[in-house]
Length: 366
Image (cartoon, rainbow, N blue to C red; front, side, top):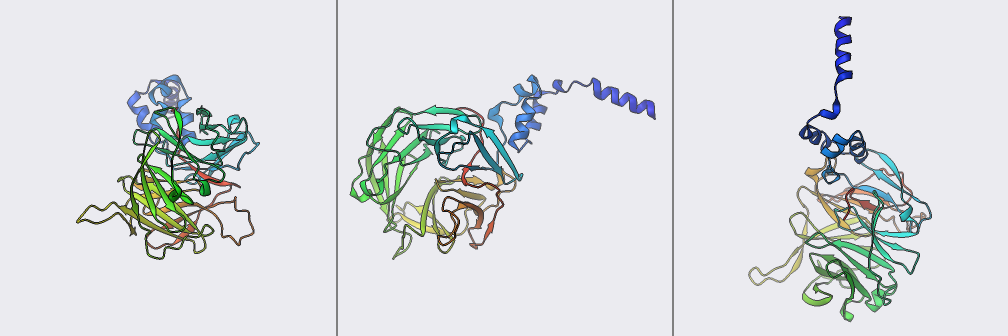
């Protein structure tokens, strides 16, 4: 028996694991749903690395980024809900920057630097790869930025001026033209929340809830239609309501109205009309199918629950603001899940101090 065990041990030692067939290595890599395991797998040897390119990274549960504005810490911290782990990554390029995530699957964030006249860039926080955008026009001091993607997967950046809600200062950068455009918006666009989806600008009036849908082509704007508020007497207070627009996997436009005071999330779907002469309207929904909406202070995106283990379908994952009367600073956010059908919420653990961004991990460069 001892001789048989020694023979087996010798066989294990003589086995060359680098000679595993590439298709077998690829199957193993696709089972590594934690990004750190995937990275460790690739650095074992050249054969394993060449069999698993970074573009084959398995679908990842979004990470939570600890992101105080304009931090002097050269390290970025992430928390994984699915594995209950905290990661720290050296990122000297993240110094003195303000982040804005968006409905993106490429893992990049729009960033706003405190230095050098506030340049805007795209930064992958996991790889430290950064793309600087052309110099912005002086008409905007970049008080707020938001990133999105068009149908070609290209990033589009919207920048507000410091007093944009009153002066309608909005500039637009499209990678195809490689230059900034100042959108010529009239007074009807004042005091609006703006979202860029499918090469269209959706502007929700803060006081009335009316949504203006505007086509953008080379910086030129064309109003397509107005959508009435979800219900009559729509109450919109800047202190208690937040709005999020996002495109789901079925290419429907979803609107999430978040009442901060009542901790209530209501989801609507955009019905563009044209059937039997009907007009565009918002229709409340209680079921978005096998999908989940991820919301943070900067924006929202939708993931299919069936593609990732641990994601609850027909739910919202929200890095929410606390109630206004709570003593902790407004800059603090606490994650929770909300069932869209029942409105029931459940807090989620998070050890980070400033958990304000959902990040979809990706390792490749734009």
